[in-house]
Length: 206
Image 1 (cartoon, rainbow, N blue to C red):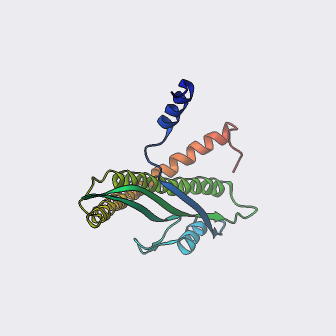
Image 2 (cartoon, rainbow, N blue to C red):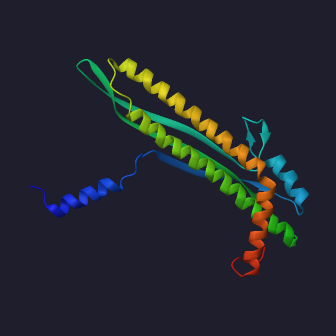
């Protein structure tokens, strides 16, 4: 008989396991932004920002991502099932880095601190959306019912993957659309909040 304390520990460890074990590999890269004024910074972002294929234009930040799926199958008499599925999403977050002049205006510094933090938050949310869908994809693949042949199981897996990645793309586009509508009001609100924290001594002066 298993030791009761050991059994309890095993049950706790199983309960603590996440629903999906999709893997995330994340790296960062930065592009330089120069300039002393707000117009300078805007021009630099438009000139040096990463070009996004879906829009054909340059953006102040971007996240490149790729999904990799590994599926194993188990065949028995008259059926074939998905034995295991593992999904890895590899992302590269591209962010701006301002070469801040020594005598940059405090208002410009405040704007940059606010903007750059918001750009990073935005791109990190793209990463979260991708990881969530990687986990959903992994769970959906594992839930495919047994098929008569492994060829049919592979076809079902391909259909599941295509459907889940399509939903992922839709969620990413929807997020960008919502963010673009609220951009100006959000930046102004964040600037006010950041200034309040500076005045309260919770943040260093810009």
